[in-house]
Image 1: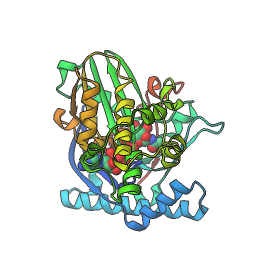
Image 2: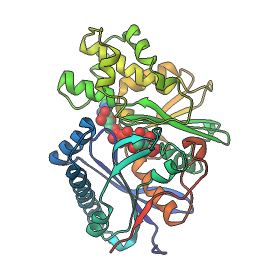
Image 3: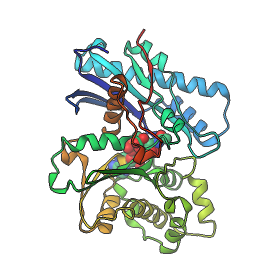
Image 4: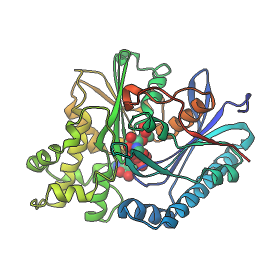
Length: 371
Ligand SMILES: Nc1ncnc2c1ncn2[C@@H]1O[C@H](COP(=O)(O)OP(=O)(O)OP(=O)(O)O)[C@@H](O)[C@H]1O
Ligand SMILES: CC(=O)N[C@H]1[C@@H]2OC[C@@H](O2)[C@@H](O)[C@@H]1O[C@H](C)C(=O)O
């Protein structure tokens, strides 16, 4: 590690497949702050390749290698561009914490695994920066879910954010493709995937309205929630499972939806309103305290209709976005991966057994040194 450097880079490309989020952060005395950020879409060819790997489940082995290589190249172009605009040399960066692209997540099978594609050698070679990656594997090897990993980062932020008023009941909800909650109550830390965030909303919007997502929830807002279908969806076993638990797009997808509502003939607006309500209810229902602060991050925080439904279900809660407490809602996850790289390089554990169910805390990730 370069001792005088305080910079780390985090890269997240999440389950929504909307592209790459990069955060350049500095970490001083355990305090993480965002210096610069960049959001860039995948090229069409990489987007198509990743979508086909994720949705087809079976794929050519060469596709895995190609996607890993292409992803590393696109990560590297974005990192180099960000550094150039900031006039920061690669030598000043301690490490990149790179999530990679999750293509399959199954921590509960007889052969538990979670696969994030990324050719880390290519990323290190093309940026000249040491790269930390494969963060979920060790937690799964220790019997954990390998996800979510951000709750410990959320907890680390508590010391530096200014919501002391609500500190005894603070819940972070990251609403990406899948939604995950971090519940900080006094000294306890809980965290789990609550279920679909935007993934069903996005897939249905693409199919029915030929738009990438339901901007601000404007389409759902025009529909009427169908209570009968909502009940059928909420009956899914995942929602009643005790923690630790995590999930992914291999479970919550349009096939899942079709199976649940084979007999339903809702119009598209009502369907979208019902799917949005599913996300709102599965995020709000596990929250037990009467009041507190619900801090939203991830793209779903921009869905005004979804946010209104969350506020509706949590009337005494202060529902806000992490931007309002000084942490970028768009780059929270990328910041978390920069922080995870910092933990790895400093030999510090980065999983929370109370969240993932691992039998012990451990240093996570693999290090690929800059050549
Ligand atoms: N203005 C908006 N209105 C409604 N939804 C939006 C808006 N902007 C972004 N989104 C939603 O946010 C999604 C992207 O969110 P985000 O980037 O947090 O997901 P991710 O990082 O891929 O997911 P995950 O956290 O599951 O890994 C988009 O696919 C879209 O559904
Ligand atoms: C396997 C996987 O990639 N899981 C992601 C996904 O996206 C949201 C949710 O599902 C969460 O469990 C996790 O990402 C975040 C960054 C996490 O590990 O905390």
